[in-house]
Length: 239
Image (cartoon, rainbow, N blue to C red; front, top):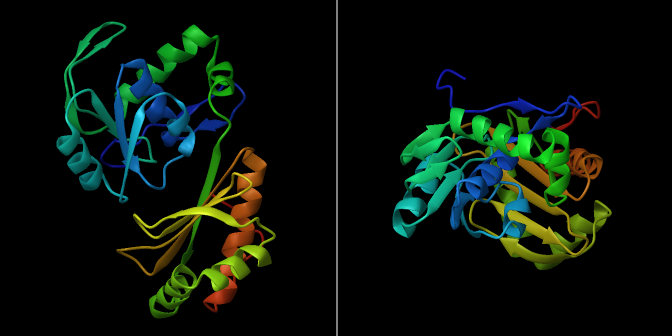
C-alpha cells in the first residue's frame, strides 16, 4: 500500500508466504526473546521458542506491548509489518531498533533464512504446520452482527451448537482479546470479529493444512452470513 509497510514474498512453488509467517522467522533470526503480535496472527509463533504476547489488532497495540515489555522484543502484524525493539546483530552487521512498521527487514531476513535452508519452500516446510485464511462480510447490519457475536460469546450452549452445525469439534479455549477466538479440540482455530471502522464482519480460520483452513473459512463465512441475514456467494473464498 502507500505506506510500503506490508511485505510480500512468493516461494519457488508460487505460493505466498504470509506476513504472519515472515514475522516470526525474522524475529527468530534476529534473536528476539519476546514477540508481540495481534491475536489474529498465525499461532505457529507459539511453537518457535520465543515468548509470545498477544494484543488487539492494530500496530498501536503491538507498539504499546513492546514498550511495556522492553528487552529483546520484536513485533509484527498479520500483514507482515515488522517492528524491532532492540539493537540486533544481523547477518550483515548491526541493525538499530525501529518502532514503526517495516517491510524491508522481514523480506531480507526471510531471504537470508531461506538461503540457509535451501529455498523458501524448504524453509516453510521446517516451520510448524499452521495455515491461516481470512475474509470478511461487507455492508453488514452491525447491530445484528453484534447481537450474534454477543449471543454465542455469552451462551456456551449456543456456541457449541454453532460449532456443531459447522461440523467442528468442541472448543478447548477462547480468547476475547479482540472479538471471539476459539481454539478447537481438533487443533483448528476460528476467530470472529466485527470491524471497528467499517460495516464488516471478519472471519479468520487456522488449521494444520492450507486447504483445511480455506474450507473452514468458507463454511464459517456462510454460517455467519446466515446468522446475521446476509447471503454469502459460495464462490467467495479466503484472502
